[in-house]
Length: 623
Image 1 (spheres, rainbow, N blue to C red):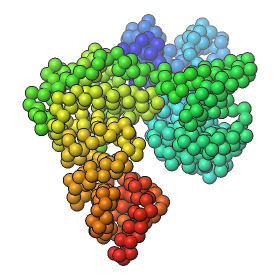
Image 2 (cartoon, helix red, strand yellow):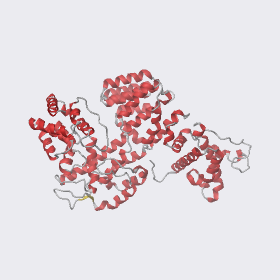
Image 3 (cartoon, helix red, strand yellow):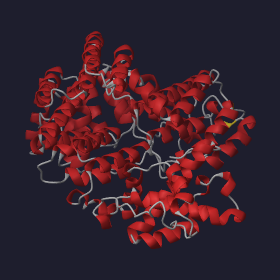
Image 4 (tube, one colour):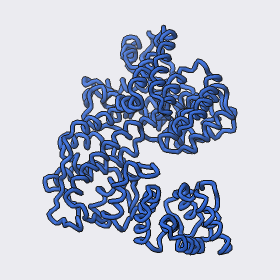
């Protein structure tokens, strides 16, 4: 992502140098001939990266001096660029002796011409040029990198840069070929593979994350194994499995007892297990231990992190992300400075039974028109809750400046919805915290609307209603507790009042929640509102009848449901929770539909009397 605000001089230099590096990499990956490259950058460099030139060298009158400087910059870039043609080893170009003719062609001695200017140029490292080289090579070529001579640390640093730029899929594509190797994984791959685990966490891929950790343990050297055990320890702590977490931590400690990362893991793991007091004590212990080993200051950052982690708990990760991400920090500051939510809708046509079309108040029209001109998150299609293309962060500077100038936009459902979609593409602890705060603001606006129109519909079929309804849907989806502890009221109002057509399919979630809460009559009423629906709603109907003592009706309906989907009998008889294949569409009557229905109600079907009913019905219908 790039911030397109007006740049300070240092920013202008950095951005121009970055563009020169990337353009140079594209040229050099195709043709590594040094003389051709130096001639090219001398001719075109000033137009590609004018910001690297001092003001005194800009303009046609100074074209000769600018060309000389660009040739020197070309020397600097070439010498720091690990090209595939050179087996990823940078090659320095020979420079004239101090008393030899200057390389720029002036015929003056090098020491009296370009040498002082070259000495004043900043030094480039391979870490600064490698990401551009890898981009220029293309993703297909990344598959061959593990067998090449490229330094794993450069790949690790390039992937970290992609992650910083929120190109998570690209970062995964760069690192996965290394994990796909049959092994053994050398210890110099440890950080690279560990970063891939972080990326899987960012993308919400727990199975891949766990499989990677297990592969690191099975195929890696001691340090790689230790990183794998560290990963499993953290995952077990997050899952509330203290014995597994401690066993994995012990294995990691045995393999790499001096790894400073263990200190951070120890405290984080205890926080994940809910042991805040012990986490603080362990943080203090590790700080004292590291201070004794810190004569050279190499542990300063880790010591500071442990201090803050012990004091702040998981909030530390949110604060740390905000400190290192100026865009999220700026959005956080804007959100914190907003006045209390104020409903800004034109509700003149709204009635007690139907809100009709949720139109913004006239006073917001001009600001929203400017917002749509600069903000592109890719509005979801149909009933999806995720952005469909678009990249709002490319225009961050423009839309952030607009939000700061127009705080009333913080009361627009369109803006809140758009920001939630953009933050979803920017996964981090801080973006998750910002999303929660934005949802709270959206819910506060909905509370004001509901107070005025408690029983009014708000149909999804009306296009302008979708941003507001998506805010409620995001809140429901974010609450995965069995009884919808945080979202029950919203879930019920959304299905039963606002959008009875239930385009998002929340009725099955609501039915299961009502059953878990013991509201069996309400669950029955809901199921009867949606006859001939999905397997999941039919099974909820069966459960509601059974709990209300209407056992004969429950048995007959179960038999009818099992006949309608031939896969359901076998699935329902299993005592193992199914793991169906996830996909955007589910075919009615399929094995996948049966598995999804049983998975989401698995706990509700484990009573012995219910198991007996299922077995009896299966025997009777011959399934």
